[in-house]
Image (cartoon, rainbow, N blue to C red; front, top):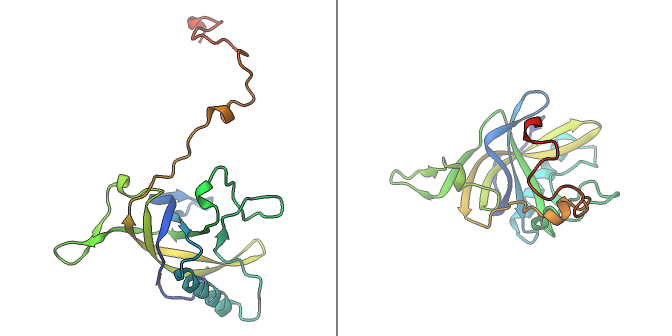
Length: 200
């Protein structure tokens, strides 16, 4: 993995899958902090991000094409579209541009969109204040990778500024779907056990 670009400030995006307070552990035991951004495809700031990703790939592989760029369309996944999404599960992705940004081995710095008396950004320390559904901007750079026969570009992230609150993205349970295979009255409907409490 190598970097070929300097930092860029992203346009505003809606936060999804915010692994920013606690890292995920990969199979190789490396710690990874990450966040997924939901971008408005009409935001002109996306053009600069795309240009940076293409420049990064071109510098690394000047004579090759077919790189995998870190932008995914918010479309339904099917047998011919492995980079799509289950939009029933993630309806907020529909018709958006989805970008994952990661930091390997180093926590992402989080700040509010305000400055304290010393002229510094106020850090976010309460996990309840930064969540999937709020809006933010990030400082990112591009990295190239080559794995499993694929050449691609990903975004590394160093810091995030929260712009504003938003509706939290929570997967709401649907009992009708969860228990679709269970017929009504298939089992005991009361709270007692046919085996008796002593047998449990």
